[in-house]
Length: 488
Image 1 (cartoon, rainbow, N blue to C red):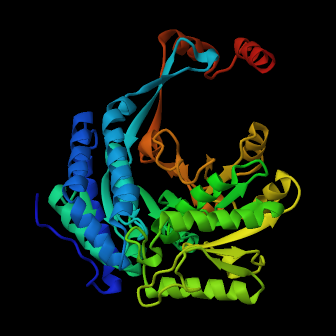
Image 2 (cartoon, rainbow, N blue to C red):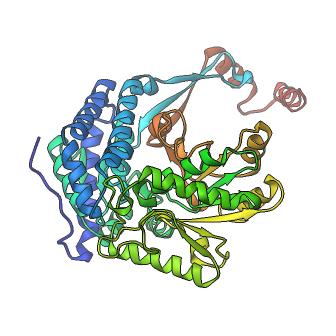
Image 3 (cartoon, rainbow, N blue to C red):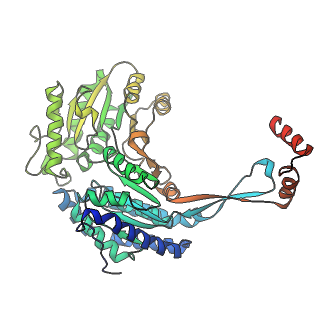
């Protein structure tokens, strides 16, 4: 569409806020002209975004592979491109219906007046994307914001530079710069964007950075959606099919080498079944990735720094008394430093003071903790920590399922599998507490980036009654009406 670019990375830090504020105001001026964008206009933008995803499929795969130094192309298609295309199609299919004003009941005291909810675009939305799924976690919120009729100022993660450059080029060729603007840069650009005069800001990343983003946005009272992470447990009940549970947990932990915000972070297993569970994990990993670290379907850690962090976490846990059980057949204890590759490793009974049990892991280490007694012991362990982004429960007993759902609080839950609540269009996706603020996807995403304006339409009869009995000067009829309202 155009060759326009916006790269603020070369500007001195002191000039960034003014430059981003000016860009934000240009986009808001353009948005005001098209603030009542029709359903056809929104669908057309979503269609262009879908075409951008599909037409550049091979380029996305290559860019992400280059950023990771080895990323399974199948996983990029399976975990990023296919779910993203499916979500855009869902938004396009339903956006016209979601845009319609929705009548709601009025308080019976005001009948026959009417009321409705009118969804309106917010204006200019800021999006700060994540590196671990650099296309899906950047373009999915973009699609939701466009469906709601907004213009978007978007910053991809600088930790995936090849993908960020491709996002900038593709989106500049797809949208006018006052509709979607991609800004490139590091932490200073993210800071300036968070402090810009936006109408909403969505950030995907760590809890630590999420706190900083929220503080920057607070200066302007910019509402935020924070998609964070945390320690998502996989709870295996005493009646679970152990082989099935281990296989599904191992698969989810192995996808993207564990670099997924909703990957199982640790497992709680009945103590008497712990060793059998670990054996089943090993069998699953060796079946899923038979060539070990040389398997084309296994992904590298993003960088040497990420690999070194995994080493620190594993070595500290081992020094504190945990047992490390590599799950790949040909793996040395800590993987391949040169290619920053590391296969799944079960870490048995790491002490709670270890960094492994205090930090989100974001890698292929999988703590396995045995619990004694019934499911209440597992529930108590989960509830002793911050509320997780996701919780996974493996049980065939309905009473156990209902008990865990009722007694724990998490962003989302998948029962008898892992991660599959995320691509459900009808479910909100987001965290709670330290794992995030707000949710999006499907209609929940449309409403996240909309203002749901309440409208009351007065009826002549109700207006006449209020004129006589409710508005000053108050008389005896007003007092009678109040006594009736208070005691009816």
